[in-house]
Amino acid sequence: MSTDATTPMPAPTPDPAPSRRRLVWVLLILAVLLVLVAGWFGARAWGDGKADDYASELAAWQKKDGAALVADTSKIPSGTYILKNMHTKKALATQRKGCAAVADVAKRARTAADSVPTISVGPAGITSSKLSAAADESSRREKAVAAYAKKAAAAYEQIHVDCLWNLRVNSPTKDSKKATALYKKAATYLDPQGPMIGGTCSNKDGCISNVKAKRLKYADAREQAYRLDQKQWDKTYGAPCAKTSYGKVMCDTFRTSNQRFADVRLEQARVVRSISSSIDSKEIDDINEKWDRVQKLNLMSSQKMLK
Image 1: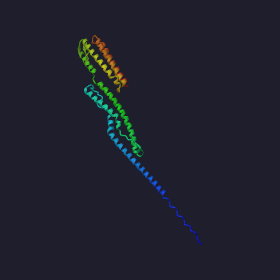
Image 2: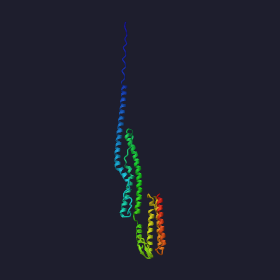
Image 3: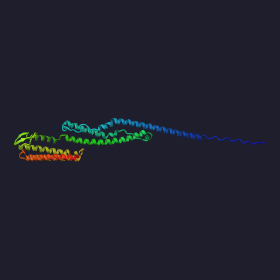
Image 4: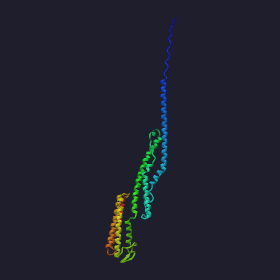
């Protein structure tokens, strides 16, 4: 009896291709991750480096340009205002230099913000918190310096306007020189302290003469001087004054006060011409009293304006 034997079929060999493909994908993903991680750390290192560079530049700016800005704008240049003997050639030369120095401060302040180092965050800010913080600080500092410099420049530009106006006030003009000469000429027609025709002069600065010819010459010279002064005051306290820190109200008050002064002095000249004698003259006493009232009124006006 015979038995048929069946030979078993061999198991199929697995295809290695899918495994290799999976391995390739895993390796590619790992490679990409490595690149991303490396890029992340590289970007962070670059960002940190930029932040360090900014810190160094900022420190240098603070030491030089920043310190110069603070030093410039923390004081008024010497010579800007002269308080004693302001009409002398030396004082005027000093004040011219002071005004020029103020203009230089204003000019430097106007462009001071241009030199402030800045830094922007960019894509690297995602990876570098140091760079992000530096960029925030940079933005705040740039705005703060720009705002400060703008205000400082405006302040010093105004001081420059004030300085030039004050320099013009202090500078002798053709009219002021004439007025000074006329006041000196008028003084020669006064009678000196002591005995005088018709009485005695008790004023150490001299008295209005009782001699008509001298009295008339005195009045003429004084009137001419007053009118020149009045002309000068109109120029001084007009439109140029209104542009100064005094402002229009204060300048108008000054001009009104000086106008009162001129009016009384011109009236005094007319009185001196009209009197027949300067000895115990009621007319002169009256005009002197009026002058005292004007002085008090001007003082009150100034005090009211400054309140």
